Length: 516
Ligand code: FUL
Image (cartoon, rainbow, N blue to C red):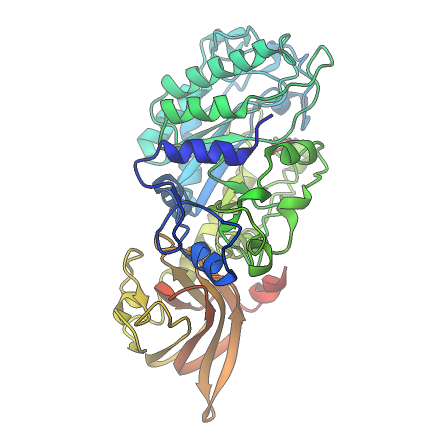
């Protein structure tokens, strides 16, 4: 099996923008570290690694969802066997528009359908196997779930992605070269017949097929194929664009660098160690406390933009189980997950599994509505709006203009610290800080402190390490009319897009998990 680095190189070479750069002053999605590079040059290169347009679009989605549905929904299992009878798939009231509407109303910007899970059952009438909806009673074998969800996404104006499990417990050719051809055919169907596809999600599970054989996946070929058919789609997890955050709890890293060593991305290791069992066994590589800090990048062979996706299910399982109807995560728990995924420089991928009727269950709908209300009530009003900004540097008003694309920065690249003082419009009470770096320039901030003026001195409200696309920090409520952000360390001149101050709609409880 080839490694991911080669695939990244390939995909970048196909891009119109310069992919690989050698000079630390250039910007690129991928840098090679030369043996003679000094530490300062390596840090400078790290600060100039930027997302591709498809990675930037994906990051800005913030909230995405999974729909895990298939034969497991009807067998009440998490993993199938590949021996299921297609006749069991009969979601008699299936309404994909309801799924997408519920997701959209919760603030979700893109959904991913499990077109084929490990059991091999295809939710679209594929020509590659009989093991599909065309042999199910659902719509008398005339159904096509890919089509239903694609159309609903178009109608509601949200993105659409596809999960296609490389592991296939049903395919008789699994474990042979013919399977790689079949997989390419399945990709072709999915990526040509349903309009724009925005994300292709490959999971790391690689078990045995029906004949006891294991498959050597031809990832390179698949990536090239996807790039050709859907050039704007991000390829996630076992793919070059998006990295698994390393846990399925919904809690990302406190220090989350989107720039990581390229030699950390060994596809073989990921496939061998990750996601082999329902009780999740993560890889060492992806679970480190910090993946892209100075210590990790110092000895890297290359540096690449490879951001984190935080996947978690709204229920204990990925598929629907009636016994979990009363175990749906509460609005408060979902809010905590929001702070700990989106608020930690990640994109949240929240699984909402349709039930046996083919609907999102009432319990999930209620939880999602409650969550959305908490998010809206908290973030509707930025209490820093209209503040007077004092800082030495360029474009200071950009931090409060509500436009992500504009940013404040220091006078020169050498100024890697800054003190941004905000004189608020009168006294305000707040307990949430929101910071955003302009990642189209790079991710740079390494350490910051946030303080408020009280009793004639500056007092610390909170502090942090990385910011990235978005950082949310909760703290005990503070009432003040003057605050300041001290950027203590940055890899190059910091570029801050937005600052926000909010009052959490959930009184008190919600700051406890900052340390998760
Ligand atoms: C895992 C799979 O084995 C689970 O069933 C689920 O699809 C999850 C998102 O990825 O590895």
